[in-house]
Amino acid sequence: MSHDALISELALANRLLVNEDVLDTFGHVSCRHPDRPDRYFLAAALAPVTVGPADILEFDLDGALLTPSDRPLYSERVIHSEIYRARPDVAAIVHHHAPAVLPFCVSGQRLVPVTQTGAAMGPNVPFWDSADDFGDTNLLLTRPEEGQSLARALGPDWVVLMKRHGATVVGRSLREMVFRAIHSTSNARTQMQAMLMGGVDALTPGEIALAGGDLKPSPVNRTWNHALRRLHLLESGITG
Image (cartoon, rainbow, N blue to C red; front, side, top):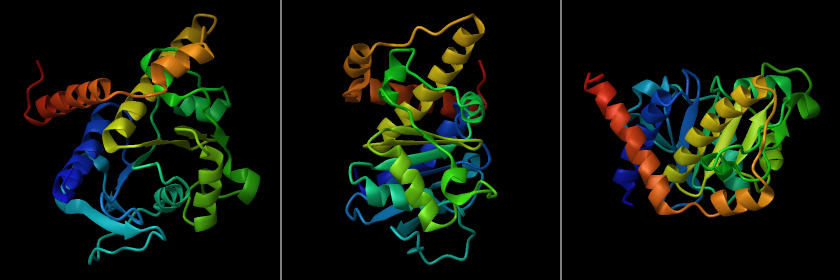
């Protein structure tokens, strides 16, 4: 994918994930530079629903701005910088506070795959608690050591829950990350509903490996195209 096409898709991913109830006012999405793995793209500090291609900026793995700009920047870009540094296989990241996921972050209840598409979370969704390493904070990750701590907690996994805060989801491509963010959020919603009914019958390790271990382009692109169409209908004012 060309540089310009990737930037356009990153801008779309911001708005698309808002429309899918993953992102709110304060979440953020990034993708790694296609030719420079030591750089990544992230929007200026805007509400994601407003992000367009002209709002995308370039950063290095220290979170330093490389695009000439005086626009405000996300304070939590160390989340992106340090995960890209620690995980060469990761090409896209979203940090979000989806309402369906937040109860798991607050309660400490484990988020587990309970649906076929939820298997894309993988067999383990770790917890990270900023208080373990840093005591009381304002819950924002603004220092490199905080991003490094989160990256260690994520380890080789795809989703990490952040106690009392939100979640961070990664992927080997932008569209794969979007697939995983949408379906892990949907899985959380389904799991919570099942818990209210009295119990959760999670996928077996074998089912998780078979259903989510190797995401194919077809379901990834189908999810992207479905969500993109929903976004286009909304943005064009068509509701029915």
